Length: 339
Image (cartoon, rainbow, N blue to C red; front, top):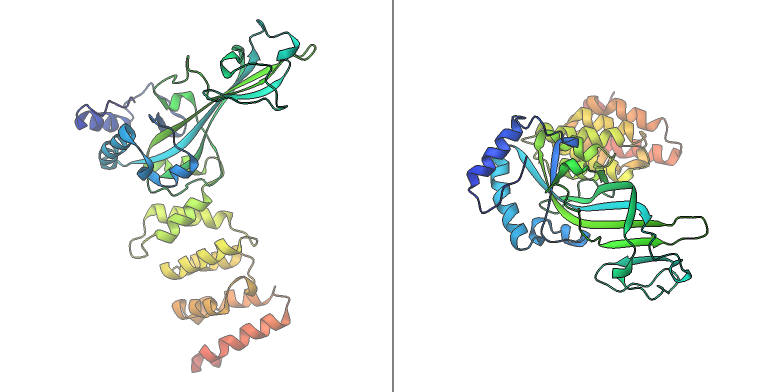
């Protein structure tokens, strides 16, 4: 699919997204089924924490118009920093003398010294060209939703040239940064070109989980979704997010266990609560006694009884076990006290 000019009628946008939704673009095979549209301006990680509020000019106009239409067809929008690296061998013409046997990093548009404080008298425009490309890599970092919430934490997501709009955006474009290591003896030297842009990700809501969790990240965002879910109107997305957090939960993640414990109470979901207890190591010391008593009141003693017993057994500190039992006693009803 090709994103039309925002000056064109909104109906064109609807037409493109409708065809994409129906998989009408048969010749377009998109990894993870999303597109990444290069924005006009570049935004830092700090900027992206503001979400769409950080966007300027044409970028803000684009997101506003596209967001309205995308929502009609179930598409979500995200922002991210794109990093593209091209590695290869430098052009050998004119770079064999001693003054160029240096390792340096050069930012285009800025003066920059080499690693040893000397750049051989070169300005950034004298960095050698790329003679042969050996490898390329492209990743998405700092992926956020339009509110600025991180969805993959510090995890980077792989992205392909096929995902980009426009096509081949870095062809015949100067890199933002070059890292050059000159000739040393028989070593041919190396050159890295770095390109940095900010992109708008367009992806259908059914494919979001696949993108978010493809790199093993997204736990932070999943927990964010669980926390903000409406317990009176839980969606399949909310439940998938909860399952994602529970799957990765372990005994070392006390803060996450506590958050999921509270969400289970808010959702009044006993099975989710039991899973939190189990995955967090079934230790009394993981949770505040007051919270455990609250779970008793929410679910009833018979439903939490086995979990309470499971928590007592592995707790090695006798004092902690006694304190827990004594704390429970005043809250028991007459019939429960006899059990």
